[in-house]
Length: 632
Image (cartoon, rainbow, N blue to C red; front, side):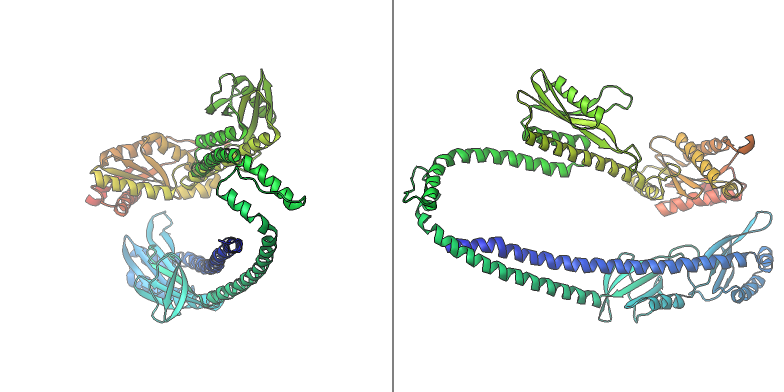
């Protein structure tokens, strides 16, 4: 292959191939950028729709308060006079600006007026002056057609579909599709849309209604095409400039290297003993002399390069392992230390963590043979831990370097940083050079950042499944646990029980003593649950003042016994009040088991909840088994 052909190939490999790759990457980035903007736009519009839903819910709640306090309606409901209740409810529809009013009592409908297409109801319990609940009121002030028209009127290129199961309540499209909750692309009537959905509350509190927003993607595709066209034109212009420059450089180099072509070919064949003829005393003669010197050194240099390549490959593997194990403190520190030993020609290294009690540092990781180097390592570590700066020590002919590891205070990533430990390396003989110091401190600094990221990751993982107030598992963790345990129960034919706990009259505690005391009540009740269960039991905050405990391998009687211990423990609580008084609280509990009370997760939760409701209904401060509810 001629020199010109090589330059042409070089140009293809260095310029054309990367530019082709860059073209694909650029076009993909442009498309992804526009798609990201479209997703952000549909998300913002979805949030706007949710805000309108929440406003409608708040309006319905205000109407429910007014309707729920209507004396005539309350009298008819308590007396069980359905016709009178429905007649008064129809009057209240116009008086209170409501669209639909639904009243239930013990699962029976006492009054249902207004179109069934009404959506976004607010729910209120109906309680007489004596505290006895005589029904549940649900009120909607929102017509789905008006809601959809309001959303469409606020945004361009936006369509809305509102469904209740298979029924279309409102739609700005003909033949609207059924959509899931995930953001997706859909084609309707030849038009392409980006769709997003959310499920608001419906009458009876299930989430059967789905509000879907569909944004026409025609403008996004047009913007993407325009941006890709502009990017393509810029790349073509850059390619033209690169081509002209490559031609000029190729011709210049060909003229200069033509005289050395033969010598270069001989050296290229591996004939390092061949001498390049030298003529004259110009720059090319000097170049010939350098060729001759180079031929004698190439073999030695090649061996050195092979060794260096081996070390480089090892370092690259360790870097890859670092990324793969960056959530393992010890593995991360070991990789950093091994890389530092190779880069600084040190003999041994270790990672030490400070003792919070003031004792000597504890050694987490050791690398290399540290015999005879411990004194130097300890001296450098002490200097680094004491001042929070890089330390260096020379003891008995041994040189050591140390670097502090920084971290935020436990559980407080916004607090001031503190020195939590140090990494150090040492060797016998010569002191470390400046490049070796820089390499070591760079690696140690990266290790400190990675360790802090590990701590942050662990904190985020813990917070994702923990209720901040009580320290119990949150609703998300509860759902995962109950699903897992029910599946394990089904697979291994072992029982799993569920105990639901509800603090009696908790709302009155908040109303009378304030939410701070209510929070303290929740914390102490949570402590009772933790103290009453086994290590394998999973207490959780189910929501509000309602808690739950999943009991693997426990039958209904065992769940009842545990629930009674919890109930008695809660009754024994004494929460101090201002003025030296004490607050005593009680709780009602429901227990259910699979198999027996139910066979799946939903049924098990429903059975325990019904048992809890029976405990409330029958006087509170008691435990009811799900079987007792079923027999009743």
